[in-house]
Image 1 (spheres, rainbow, N blue to C red):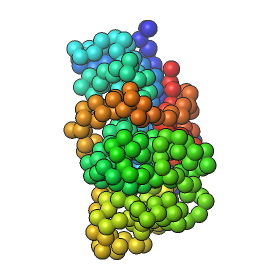
Image 2: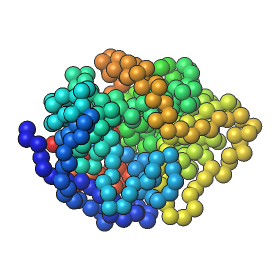
Image 3: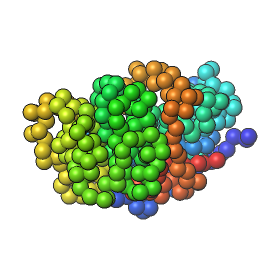
Image 4: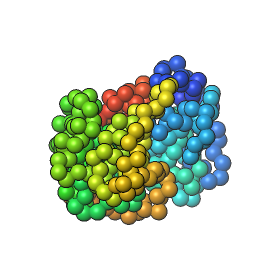
Length: 337
């Protein structure tokens, strides 16, 4: 394939107030610069959109810098190396890197990893075999310190991370895994994936539905992707010495007023609960351990994964908006080629 002279990119045109809209994004065309020593040119074939990106659209201090206005967004992507000035890469390699939201990316070779597409399709390295999977594994086993026989509750369980958390817990010997989701179809899918109990949080108060699903066992581990009412319900139903891994709070990302918080946090004192926030990049030292386990689980069909595909870079903003509204099952992936 010939080396392109231009590339399309999605830029952040303005910062969203509340829910993001199409007007917050701009599709633009830019020149592709010549490669410098150590760099590679990648034709992106798949890119990821993720809930954490909403926080980066705000101009606030966080664990990663905010997206700049009138500049390309970034995020996980996989693609084919077209040209290389890196000793570790050659044309034709399929690589995982962090410069999504564009058709072509000039990437520092130290920030691109060659992936094995014989094990799984390239898009899986944006989900089950990538940072999404590591988030699920590290959050469950290292942050929440999961133990065989635990009862586990996962919110946002039909999403890319949540669906893997539940399956990993089952593979590691959970007594019971409970998931919440936002539609009857998603609840049905969770049961197909091996969750023991699942409920639609639109059907009634989360606390009542969770207590019914847990029964006399209560819950030992809560993997929180949602925050708000879900976190409050988990604290109420949690057993003594329960552990909470706080991965996300998607129910609050687009609110403009005061967020809903757990009003029963004082229960954590008497129950001696552990609530621990985390970001996956702090657990990169477990990436090899995770990759070996997940590879085996996939081969043994103990874990499966869902992907929701949207085609075309121009549709990436809408894919992100749809993701925030729960339109995906599993990982939301934008196909670029």
